[in-house]
Image 1 (cartoon, one colour):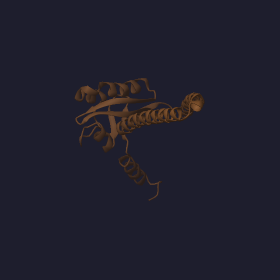
Image 2 (cartoon, one colour):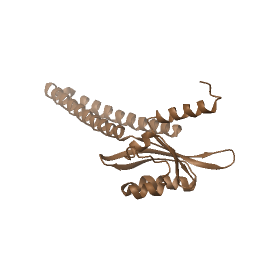
Image 3 (cartoon, one colour):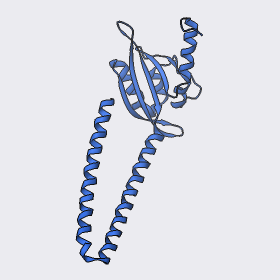
Image 4 (cartoon, one colour):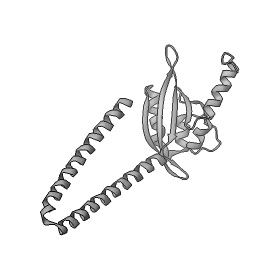
Length: 194
């Protein structure tokens, strides 16, 4: 298949669009959805119902629980600006968290439409929260373990007791320093990626 052939290129584009894991639709600046992939209808809980031909206003009126999500899209389309955001989305199976990106598409001289992409990041967000909880539990366990060791050393030899307590204090302050520096480094890296 040669990409110079218009029909072959269009078929390749359609295959690419349908095999993405993100939901995608194209919104004209009149508010009408020009095209979408099947994933978009699935993520937005519209089933097999086509979104193409509807307007953003139609979607808001059909699904009033998700005004914030659709208003974010409407605002980006109206302002013709790029927006990246996390928005809650209410489906029949519960609340989901969607990563939303709206980007203006331009031909050589003017804006022609807005490309809306979104993906469900609920599981990733939940996994991050669970990791934080497990990290806190692990740190608590380690702290209690160190306290038990200190108690055992104190009972064995009172001469070492102050030394052990001081070493724990030094180690604690050092770990707090590393934690602060690590977070600062992580934030610098994230700001460079945006």
